[in-house]
Length: 220
Image 1 (cartoon, rainbow, N blue to C red):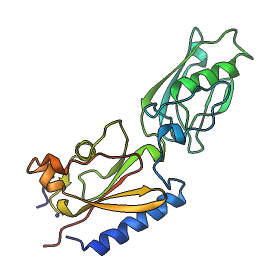
Image 2: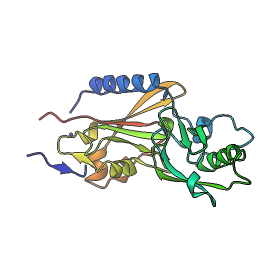
Image 3: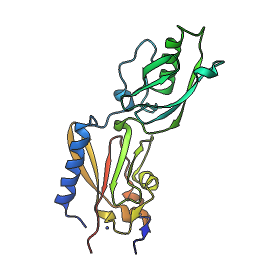
Image 4: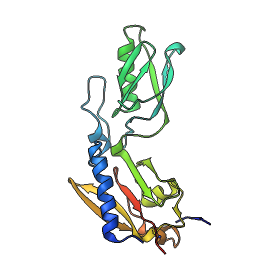
């Protein structure tokens, strides 16, 4: 019977091969290096302000609530399309991927001025995915493998809580943290069992946007 534990053995070469394969797919998809939120954003336009590293940048798959003050017919809750755009009544194909909610609100206001006098727009996030460069991906023998949005000061422990820990088949102390630094792939061994089962906080490493945690299966 398969059980789950809060927190299993591949050889080092197999783990690194798997890591390289995943990194190659991500790089081909355009997530080839972890960058700060400010670097991920496009160059600011007249309707945009400079972002900081802690600003949330909208990404494909996010859900946004757009409120147009005193114009309920123009307000909508929409999902960001794979092309990074949204559409609302009167205004179509608004680019929003890589922008903050405030920047998107100002852009919508500019576009609505053709139809509404002095429009006031508020954008509220109702579902978070974020840009690929802002995500942490946890794959392998996690209870619920998935990509989670990076948060400031996020650690390995935070990521493992997000995925519900490890399965009973996980080789937690053979997990790998894969990161791209200056265009080069690096790999660091994680001691997830020591962290989650024994409470060894020395195994709780800080994470960076774009990191991948690979959890291999233990072979008994």
